[in-house]
Length: 101
Image 1 (tube, rainbow, N blue to C red):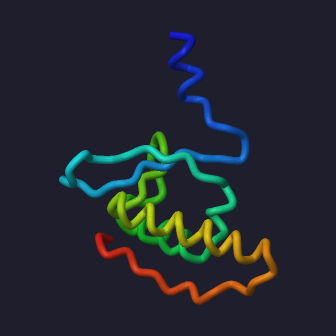
Image 2 (cartoon, helix red, strand yellow):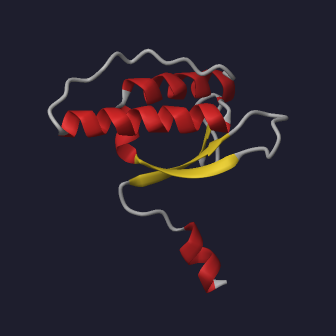
């Protein structure tokens, strides 16, 4: 029982999200992401979509209505932009669409 509690602990500065679409193979998948994602324009669009689909009130991890593949691509884009801004490169255009949403 002690190990289960430790496995579910989330590192400070991070939050857990559940990603997937109803009826999608494999169902929902759990990801731990940095809280800083919440302020990124691409992620904010996904949060708006989650609010439309699921509403404001939910219990447990935040559910994001997109495919796992789209989420992985979104995460890659956010990380890439973060790397560019660390090296002094300006942010690139934030056009991204989640096909499964």
